[in-house]
Length: 351
Image (cartoon, rainbow, N blue to C red; front, side, top):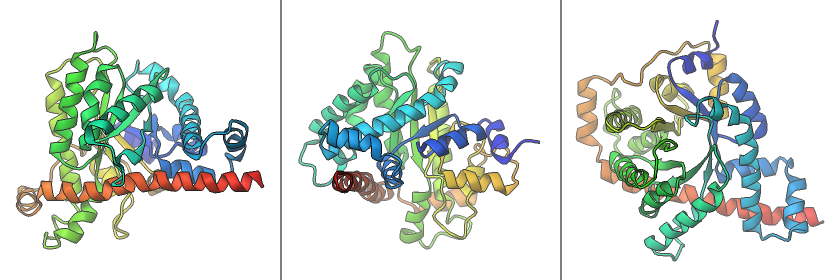
């Protein structure tokens, strides 16, 4: 008898982990996870455990690195370790799975950043080339902001595997996808071309509860799922006519529930059956204890009246504008927190 997570994978979903904590990576690999993703919050949480004090001593005091340099070098070390765990998956699938995502500098999206959009794009290109060099199963994570999208064609043309993050709407997805496809066509070969598009789901439902409170009970809490399924359908249609060896996939991200009244597997069960889900460790633990057996649901939409109500009441551009304002703050602030934490560690480890 298969476990709940094994039944999820059996529907066709690739299970990735929203963490690079070595303990979670090992445990979730055994449960069926085939990839992972990193961000500054995850790295900060690891530092707080004290498990990385010795590497930090080497970086901060022996190598005399700045707080920022030490943050990036430690991130690189942790992501490399996760890549080793998933490397056999990458080899067995010939590059179609087994990736770990490495997020580029979130401070490029800080409102305090004085660089122009063009200059930020150039910086994304520079950093993407630096942190991808020599890595077969590392994805470079770039946000679907004007600067991020402005960098994607060049990054893809350079042979870099991209994970587009912070996507909330069809407009963002199409702009990013088209830029990446332009870059792909500039490559000598499409054999190693791989791209994924991370759709943030639960944050959409948090938004509609606040901004569109007059949605009916049938529609409220479904907007994130409907948007994700429509983006998945659009992605399926676009790539079906472009014959690439590897799959160009949607990542269903932000799958941890925010409403305490929702079961922790609300989004996981609604999107089972295709592409990739990056779940927090706590979500996977809850699923494993649930006794659930998953079936394919990713191509099943709510009733027509629910879809019509969502289309009538939810303004996609207004939603994108607000969620991106919030999203870029949530993107940049954890990097500042990571730098502050390392500065504190510098003092405590020196003492």
